[in-house]
Image (cartoon, rainbow, N blue to C red; front, side, top):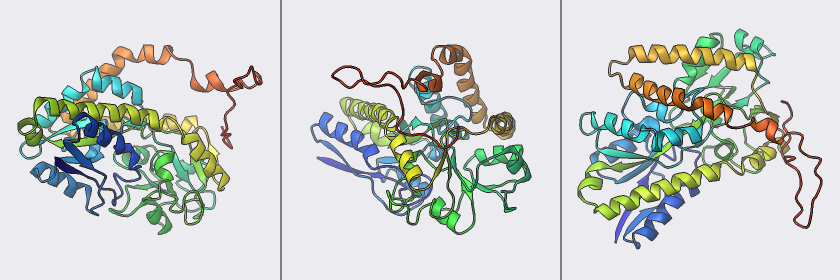
Amino acid sequence: MATYAIETNLAGNLDDGDDVALLDTFRNALDVMSGSAIQVLPMTNPGNSGQVMMDRLLAGTIKFAYGSANRIQTMSNPLFFAHLFGMEIVEFCSWWYAGGGAAHLAGQIASLTPPYNNFYTFPLNCGPGESGGWYKEAITMKKVLDGKWSDGSQIKLRLADECGPVHGLAFPNTVYGSGTPSVSFLIDLKNGLFNGGELFTPLGDASTVNGLFPNWPNVTGSIIDAGIKHFYLQTWQTPFRGRCLFVTKDWFDNILSGPEREMIKSAAAKCHMQNVAYLLQGQDTIIKQFQTLGGIIHERLPNDYLTALRAATDEIYRRNVVADSTNMLGATLAHQRDFIRKNHVRWQAGNLDRAWRFKGRTSMGVIGPNNIGGYESDLHPDTW
């Protein structure tokens, strides 16, 4: 029986905040399909950086790794993690599985020089968008334009990848950063480096491993306890959240049999589908607990704020494409935008607005023996 470990960067601040259960479906499915011939150990916690993890995979010393798409050594990797103001998770899945996305990335990876092309990528925990984040005060255009909270203190936000430059272009008086390597957002915040910013989905925020609530579900030692109480449900920086399974190419191509390769593909696809389902439920309950602990829950970010960020996003993408001598970023952005142009009228017109579908439908009462009620939510945000 072959036994392998999934290498992760669980101790760092880039690929953490994930529930171990998010990998269990992959591990269990592969175990069943292979008749226990291929065993994948639970996530390890080696305390190394994400790059060290990826180096081990590229060298073939490990067979599986798990982490953000930003571990892919192409200039286009941000677009496999989040397309700002672009696709949501169901749209990304359509692009990846049916719109040529998987083949597009495979072609880019194959064009890299060894050993940076020695892996395959499978979506494993690509799920719905992250939250808008946590802030010292409610966000207004005046505050972000001035770069000051109402008490005169500097606005300092944690914004990763291209989100920082986007925010900096739209609001040059704010300060942004991507965080201290191997230090959690919560520690950076308590050390005064930030007083707001995005992190994960509510599930990740509530994680006791480098989340924002080390004593969850209690408030002690948390971001709320530190005075950062304003939480925004709506996101702009991460309409979908990308986490990938990386598999060593030489091993996959030359050691495994055809049926074994199909087992890995099928286990990854099953895990991805399961994680989309898993991450689309249960989040309201976590947010309600944020509220119980003293958090102030905002359902929407200000429209004028979002409009300014959307315009800045287009400009930052333009600058990044021009600066990319490999043309990988431009090629992927063009591929995704072409897919969006060909499909988004149906996406936007084929479904009623989510808020309109459910809000106000509370007058049905209880109907029949199955206690059929209305759609009143258990979670009531403090502000719209």
